[in-house]
Length: 149
Image 1 (cartoon, rainbow, N blue to C red):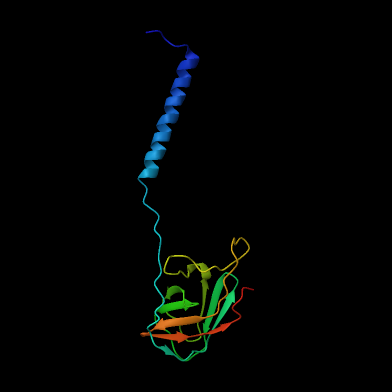
Image 2 (image 1 turned 45 degrees about the horizontal axis):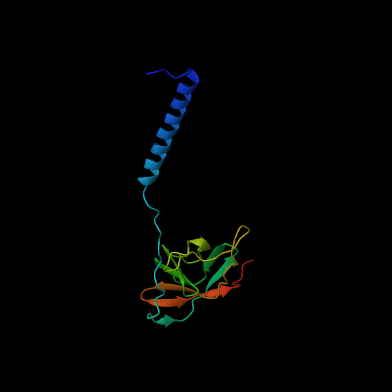
């Protein structure tokens, strides 16, 4: 068998190295875990409604801010926005303020609340209704200025 000139031999090694690297990259991408899509739950329409609590909910562009100005500590529960998007919270103490990113509120399909912001590609969604699902009932909250600032 004839020997190839030195320039062809080094080129063949380079191509072999590239093919080996490409094969390793493809094998690594095939074995990676699939992306996990977190889906929310459906709005509980069957739960009884009670009086609105004096918990003020403010929309701060891409963030939700709520302050418990009642004499009642809220236990671990689920917050609902616009009877469509939900997020579980650990609770809300008397006088406590929570700041939550709107994108953490998901619908039953896993889609986030459209909060807007500088880099948003879609118009922000208006906040019209805020409720707490707790103790087997739905409790309303006071929405102050539902549009983004």
